[in-house]
Length: 451
Image (cartoon, rainbow, N blue to C red; front, side, top):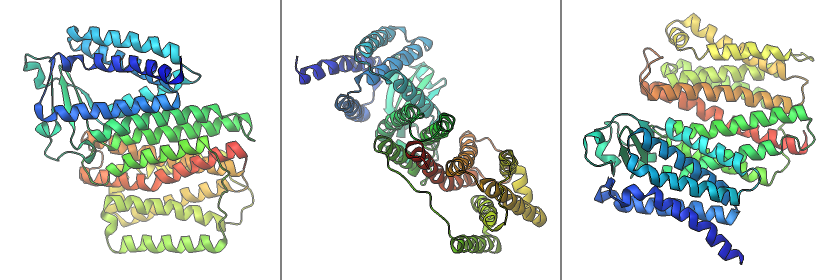
């Protein structure tokens, strides 16, 4: 049997699985509106055709069949739990086919990568509210389900850019919304997150770093990759124009990381000259003065920016303090505590209302930055970069939490609108996410080549 015929045989079970998945549509169990029929067909053919082609070219059919195994099981559970017994058999057969050909095509790491990819994908579609479990009007229909345009049931806020030309599949107690964009990016982001994670773990003991250091680097790097991947799901359900940028940013950063992991190069940590530190300090102070003096600080997003700048100012100030010995590592906990308190909504309200509290607020940020800077002195480069990534990971995760709970209209910032909280969260994410990612790449470089 030649190579081409072998690949064709590997692809046939996948086509059979897709037909089984589409059985409810083919047998009219799920009624498809005429105006979305072509969109549904084109989206399925394009996405699954692309996934199949990529899997064949990269020799990753084992991972593909493991993911279809998980999806078949998940759909089977949904069908049974919502009382749609007559279609459960199709997904049971799809599960058996998938698991059979996963076993015959699996390679090393396929199980781990496929499992992580599926879990990340599920987290993304739940956080993005693409998959919802709730009673719908579909229950009143005689049919099993209904597939219709997302514009038929859109909210007053409109449709997010990421769900343009979207389709909603409504079942009894569950709805799935997707669009051409999410159908492409969500699987890509999920797979890249999983693949990057496994590549990082695989090389955690390589290079010139010690085993303990390699484990820490791997833990931080995996945290960064998973944060970037999951974050794309959180922001994709919002209708604000700036937020779709994040889904492209997430995919782009994950792709660059994947390329780097396959083709690593040595990176050098930039050295800051005294004049560079002084220049940055002056620029930051000037910018802070302008924002405060013009009243722009009352905008929650710009208030967060000023708080961010106060921490950076303290960090730069640490370069001028003539201390040769570094502070104990546990002192960083104090800086983290101050940083967390600065995100406390009630304190933000008080700082904007009372001038002396605002000044104390800025001095607290300055002090937190100074502690971090003094903690960096006389430490190895890999330790410094690891701490930077940890700090900005904290910034990213806290603001992502604010962003996510705001999606469900949970008000924790009294006196500020939902849009203001979203702007605040996005602004901090724009500042922290690239720094966290760059620190991650540098740590991977150190792991491979040494500092």
